[in-house]
Length: 183
Image 1: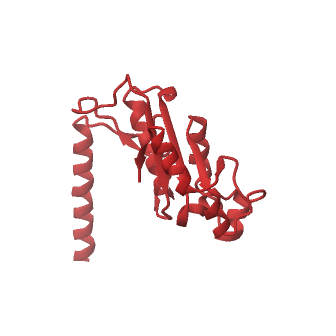
Image 2: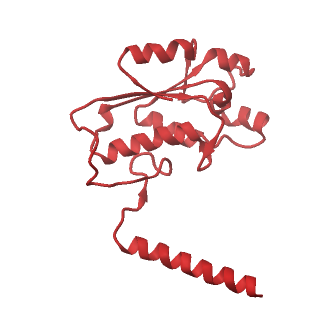
Image 3: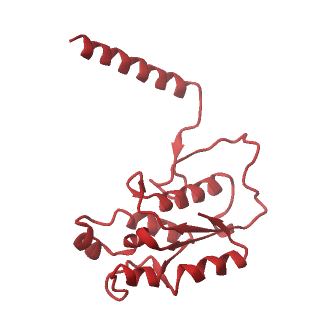
């Protein structure tokens, strides 16, 4: 019984501290452009903010199978970056974002039917892929990786994915075009 009381007291103290912290006016977690993914806190007085006169050109190397908030962690970070840039006043037309999928991340390219057959659940990445592409991101898959994973490009790939000859070609091609690599 003492353990239960101690746990209740600790929980009450923790909840009280969370309420106090939010009562001090700190920014809330939000997803201003890619809704539901890549949550950010909008700090308006940071020393370095997005430059509103720049075109942001970035390429994400998406090779991990790790997840964050229920989706591929690299897609989470793409959404977060898009949200950060948007919250910082960068127009979506000045955000040039590319992702190249390869390695263990390759199954995220599957449509729902193929994903369910192979992973025994629906593809949780489809909604974030849809939102990213609707806001101008281009998401490529290394065709070499798709072949290594036995993925049929004609019947199993979701509609948000663009085929690429190889990640080994795509990465330096975009870097040579001035895109910053986000590994």
